Image 1 (spheres, rainbow over the protein chains, first blue to last red):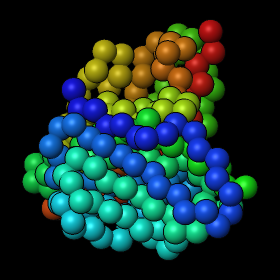
Image 2 (image 1 turned 180 degrees about the horizontal axis):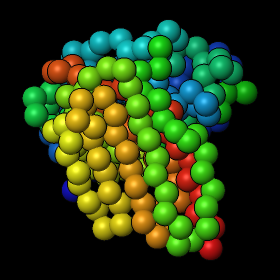
Image 3 (image 1 turned 180 degrees about the vertical axis):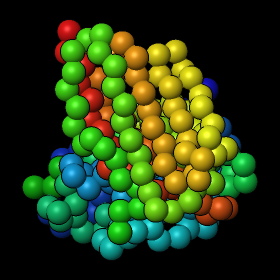
Image 4 (image 1 turned 135 degrees about the vertical axis):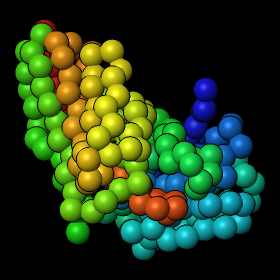
Length: 114
Length: 111
């Protein structure tokens, strides 16, 4: 079974702090994704990476950056956390763009910025 | 622009009832997936449909992809409290890496 793990289930940070959210997958997937999920807004794509050191902006990249130095690890960085970044953050991975489109999700990190 | 519209947004039913949730779009998708998300967890893939008109069954769940590949439905027979969760549909277009997600249907099945 594919396993996607996220470094924290719950996180509380203060406004202005730099926040790192880590995601690791164990199935050698090329593609990895970061989403945020908010009530009434659904899942929104922040960034994705189609391979090591490759990244592309999603629909809402402002205020975020990402890092993918190794194939199994995709990090989301909040350079200076703000209260409007309080949300559920979900990481996902996928084998490859051809054929299978299924994404496998981690359990999520619920981030609160105070 | 919300490319995938899910309905209803909320659904509360009694155990044993049947229900259908819908996922509609004006766009054509190469494939469509259904996920279920339980509170505090990430979405878990239920099924992928890729052929227009395709019907897939997963125990009491029946998934259908529209002939034109613009819409899909999920039917649950004899719902159980364990079916409670947020049901999300997601569409893929061509070789695009990204999925387009609907906002979900929050289902509550009461004992």
